[in-house]
Image 1 (cartoon, rainbow, N blue to C red):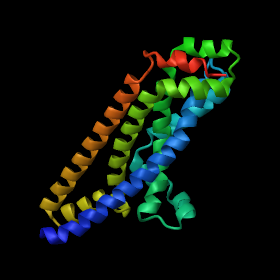
Image 2: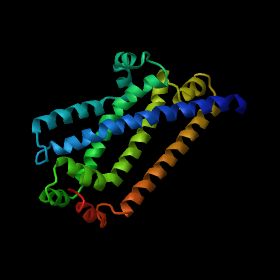
Image 3: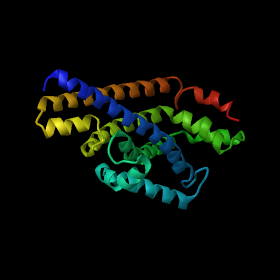
Image 4: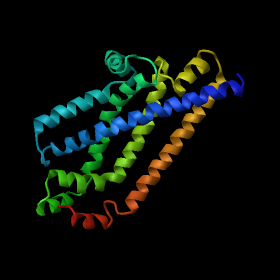
Length: 234
């Protein structure tokens, strides 16, 4: 296969992969961020302590995380068809990608938020701050560098998931690698696909690491910014 034949295939596959990963990441952050924070707040000693709710949420997250993605796609086919009207294509792939990523990201959020200094929370409470104020002024800002790193990890994982989704007709680079590289023995195209994935993941990881370091340097957990923010907490 010549480059003139491969080029349009690779261009469309790259766009499909970015489309799936982009929307899935957005949904994962919107769903996983509050879920992760809720896991911290409802835990024993948390601001909204509710051990039963915490155990139920934790178990749901654990079960969802333990399911292999290829099995999750098959299990969600009926739900995917109900949401998108089909079980193939990039729109259909977003459903299992997002559902698989939400609990994954939620655990990363939980870990990040737990690392926030409890003294900052107590300081805001002493000034009359409520739970929403603590979440908005302390927990999220102070864990932001770690949250950015967690988002980067989630994006990288979703790129791998999207390649697996390509094996069942979702499109993207995984679909190209399977249909042309494996089934039609176009080894050169398969290795080009692998190289593209490696470059994309490296760029995303570099950007995520840079953003996390920049935020931490501007006043992370150890910087002076928390004290200044506490004055505006109420």
